[in-house]
Length: 116
Image (tube, rainbow, N blue to C red; front, side, top):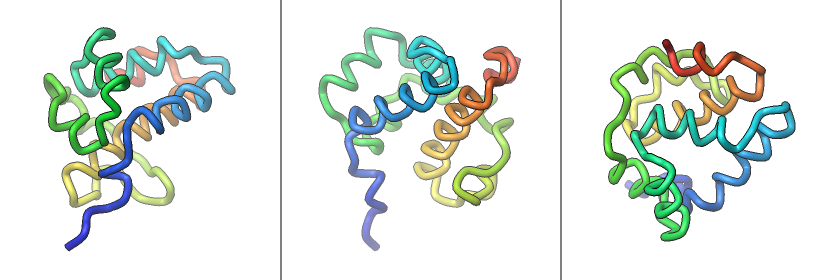
């Protein structure tokens, strides 16, 4: 079975798109970094290293310090697909991140996005 194209795409290619989406709605790069840190455990330094090394999504999530245990509280749809029903674990993590950025762009308070 072949890997999905997004798995081998450099995270650094998609990251600016996440930031642009958030900024169009009045959010900041820091907000995007905060949701990434919450989901993956990367701090600012290690996130920057991942971006500079051009790691793909598969490596980005495989090398993540820790996946937040509250990520299972992320529900809803991204591109018409319910994130809680995605079967492939890596694709589900990618969809979790997509959903968090969507919530930022919708203007949700950071506390609610981070499931506090």
